Amino acid sequence: MRLNDALKWGLLVWMAVVIWAAFQWAPSAVGFQGESARIVFFHVPTAWVATLAFLVSCVASILYLWRRDPMNDVRAASSAALGLLFALLATVTGSIFARIMWGSYWNWDPRETSITFLLLIYAAYFALRAAVADPERRATLAAVYAILAFVTVPFLVFVVPRIWWSLHPDTIINKQGTIKMDSRMFQVLMGSLIGFTGLFVWLYTIECRIERIRQRRQQELL
Amino acid sequence: MSNWLAELTAVFVKDLRAEFRTKVSLNAVGLFALTTLAAVSYTIGPYRIAEADRPFLLGALLWIVIFFASMAGLDRSFVKEEETHTAALLRLAAHPLVVWAGKLLFNLVLLIVLMAILVPLYCVLMGYRVESPWWFLAVLATGGYTLAVTTTMVAAIIARAMSRGALFSVLSLPLLLPLLIFVIQGTTAASQGEVDGVLSTLRAVISLGGIMTVLSVFLFPVVWND
Image 1 (cartoon, rainbow over the protein chains, first blue to last red):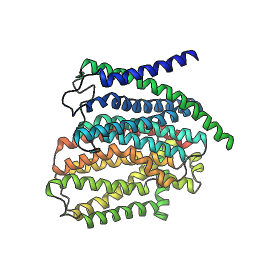
Image 2: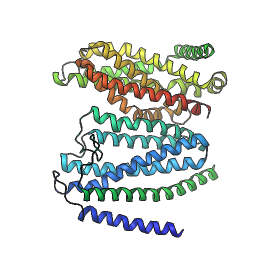
Image 3: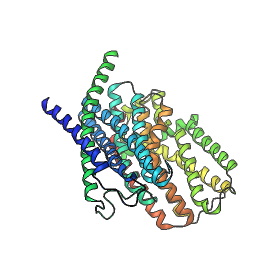
Image 4: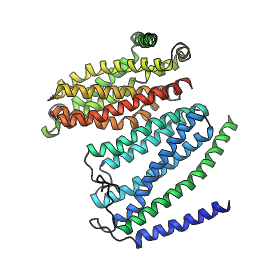
């Protein structure tokens, strides 16, 4: 328990430093309106966590189908709930940036399309869970859907932007495989990625506990 | 192998015979397509779109009509089994993969019939000229297959849940969104005679269809036997 407490306080300090560094330590980016580029330190990590949550959900789903352990269903559902939250955050931060740089909150850029798609999948996943009463069947059907949805993600993230024209700034790892970023900005971004991942892990453990209690209560009611 | 083929044919013929008895799917899909086509043709028609926008907009509208029409009826194959309580018997009578293949074949035939009626009508009513008809057909065929294989799997899932009708489109559309983007690009390229554009989208559509087929083979028995 003591290690957990230490980690939580460590995360608080880490995130505080990241937020400070994002505004004070990282230099201004060239070629962007005002200080708008600083949103990258929060936008990219939220998008990363949304994808990571989806991956965790998919892995937990595969494990559920394999071992039929109800805990894996709890893991998949909890991770998907957090993924939905972070996907929303990524959409909002991206949309603010789009308004400042490109003049409109939304213009169906391929990146915007792919995040919408992620949001739709999460929404559909929960719609499916809500429509099945039997816990075991709910777990199986949701797991199958999560796996089906997961394999279509690479098509939207990697193939569609190649076919469709995009305004989105080059992703961190661009087509040449090099990192075009100021070293201080890169450090802050990496720090932020680690911090957000830590935040996800913490939220995930809490959410798993809540979800398990919720499912137990539902079974008691039945 | 021949045993499997016989079972597959039996499942397919059974579905076809049941469909001809009621014609529920055919009516739903066909009438939905005709109504949307009438609405599109009446409000937009062949002359309302600027010449430069024609290939893209007409390709996009065609696929939107096909997609929404298929949402209206492709779920019937499995929902019907649950509604009439025949699923349990089918589970005993045939291997899961045979059931899957038979239902997929049925959905494919339904889509082929839909496209065979809808696409020529659409071309006539909207004045849609296609430069490379063979590539256009290739996009329709591969897109139709991927659409059928994805919706068959989703239909199997929703048949086991409540409020099936609404759930089918809610679950299908996110999975079909990349396909929709690819086939619209491919159709646009085919109508302009750009073979390179068609080839790049065909690659994407075929790989998506292939992955969906492989996944279905693994996941369908799990859903069906649950």
